[in-house]
Amino acid sequence: MANDILDVQVILDVINPASPVNLGNLAVYVVADSANSETAIADVKLRTADDVSNLGLTVNAATQAIIDAFFMQDDHGDYLYLYGIDSSVDQSKTKAKISETITDGWEFATIVSPTANDSVELANQVEKYGRKFAVLGMKTKAATATIAEIQAISASPFYGNDRTIVFVANGASGDNAQYAAVGALIGALGNKTPGSITWKFKTLKGITPSEVNGSVLGTATELGLILYVTKAGNNQTSEGLTTGIKYIDDLHADDWVRSSIESEVQNLLQTTAKLTYGPEGIAQLEAVVTTVLRQATDNGIILTDAETGAGKFTVSAGAREDQDTSDVASRKYNGLSFEYTRAGAIHDVTVHGIIQNV
Image 1 (cartoon, rainbow, N blue to C red):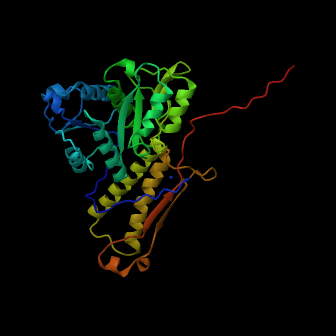
Image 2: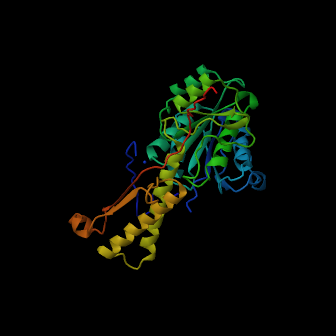
Image 3: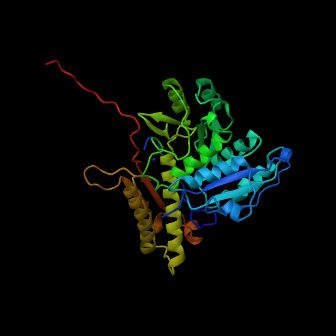
């Protein structure tokens, strides 16, 4: 993921309806539980579940459940980041830690804490950042989810955040079912090429589905919550929405486009002896953005034109003469912009049939 130390930033202006970077890494923030005399774990990056023992780490059961479930999935991300946080009554240490690490190389983050306020802090900081995702696990009291349990989540302070994912696990499947659910969800889907999948209909290793009826499932979907359920004999994720009722694959794809453009433009600036502030240099910038958007089309992010087969996107690069003289003098170019139409995905199908009597 591109970060804030780069010399180029991309601002996506998504108009509704319109809208190889590794975006599959998971961060786990672990707040020490002072009541149990726990001390904050060291900050490390894990490549396998075995790294916990290989590095001599001691983690609590909830954190271990996330680690195990993440690395159990076939196509998990390269790294799982562990961040230790000392307990603070006002979440000040949690806030500081997240602020310090939010530009690290992860796309998804969750938190293990004795208080729900730390989860709110993570969700709101990610929302303010405008990139990446906070992923929070919750669980039902029994194997069967109820409408009341599902509806109660909408009262959470972070509810409505576009970049908060809530996965509701089967509470009867273990004390740490909600943590394992988060690890499995991101391990299985987070590292897939953005644009190539939807987050609905997906099978997760090691996760027990909840028993739900149509009313419960409909309520969860209306509220942007994800359940793991059985349909037509197959276990699958019930939807792919955030609490802001945004499709995860759309936002994940936007992050890919943004970070790819940032990285490629940055690379152009670093590898070109001199990018002239004129037609040639501006054309090179335009070409970089066009190349990324063509790749985005190939990945399934951008809709293709039915007649031409080309991606439905445009790239605009204003001439030097169109830029503010102060920007030209300070070598800042603000004339590059792009727009694209998301390809979207089909999640529900209605089939109309006619049966005739002979």
